Image (tube, rainbow, N blue to C red; front, side, top):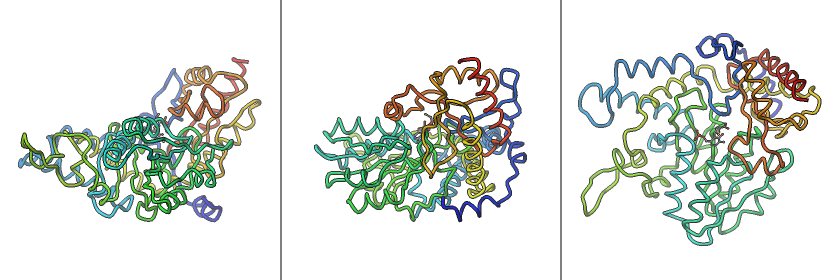
Amino acid sequence: MNSANNDIIQSIPFDVDKIRAQFPILNIQVNNKPLVYLDNGASTQKPNSVIETTNFYYSNQYSNIHRGVHKLSQIGTDLYEKTRLNFQHFINATTPSEIIFTKGTTHGINTIAYTYGRKYLQKGDEILISGMEHHSNIVPWQIVCEIYGAILKVVPIEQNGTISLEKFKTLLSPKTKLVAMTYISNSLGTINPIKEIIDLSHQNGSHILVDAAQAIHHLPIDVQELDCDFLVFSGHKMYGPTGTGILYGKEALLDALPPFEGGGDMIKEVRFDKTTFNDLPFKFEAGTPNIAGIIGLNAALDFIKEIGLPQIMAHDKQLLDYCHQQLGEIDGIRFFGTSQEKAGVVSFLINEIHPYDIGVILDNLGIAIRTGHHCTQPVMDFYNIPGTCRASFGIYNTMEEIDVLTNGLKRAVKMLS
Ligand code: C6P
């Protein structure tokens, strides 16, 4: 984010109390203390609109979709397809066929890894990822590389938690079939220069998948402008229901891939001698999907759109700056991930205190952070640490909550030193 943009978004009004009032869970007490929820990188809480939309669907509109001529099936189908159109416009996909509903980011990556592998990967081909990937963007590639004899290459991370484009370029080779890269690191907060990475990948003749799990609710994403080949994210990190997600793919590429799972909506005709597959997007949506979840996800997207991404980005940046400033005053604190381009994730250790011990004390104070490797063990290995404490922000977090966190940490340090 450049400073001119920063100035503009800093001036946009943002009524956090109004937003908080829409999240019933923010009124609960945990261990007799008001909940301070700072684990949004793992999953976000749900606003009333998402809860009510899902409840209303189950209470008044429920049936299976794409199957019946009866009224309820038609209502469900319409609502489900409305979500697809909403996301098509949100990320500016060319057609609704490019929006595939999944169970989440992990499912989206696996869908591409297995089908891309079957179609394109041969012995000696290379897949290029970065050292800051979530396990979900490492393990599926390891599995398919093993199946097809391909090689997994890794762009190392730098000390400040970024990746060097120079090193990235040297690792691209004529054998690089596909690059799979996160837009925002979940354990470091780094915002990668994804447009440059996409362009360099294409100049090299490689396809690229973008893991947007931590980006979709933080940054505006226009898939046509980015020109990425595939992009995946989860619904539960963007204030939507669990078990939902989106896989975006360019239509021609998705068309060329074989289906992933078999059964249900993904078939056109089944004969014992030959089965034909449905058109996009249904080719990749086997079995009865998470209908209520996808319908609830539409409410989550409307909620985000109503607040506006510029406001969300500005709020995130304010929380991030304030958190760095406050926590920076704690003796012996070490931050991991100090990129200039950073989202609302603060990973840290204090002296030699184990992150788990800090997490337990904070939990006693009603403060939820995540401790451990955050499903990025190679990042922890790079820094030679067992894990970190991670505070990650959502649109309902406040400066006062950062103060509560800071005081909680000071207390934890006193108790554990
Ligand atoms: N990160 C975190 O605490 P799923 O579980 O499929 O919805 O998302 C997987 C995933 C993939 N990529 C990135 C960048 C992610 O952050 C995640 C989920 C959570 O950081 C849970 S481990």
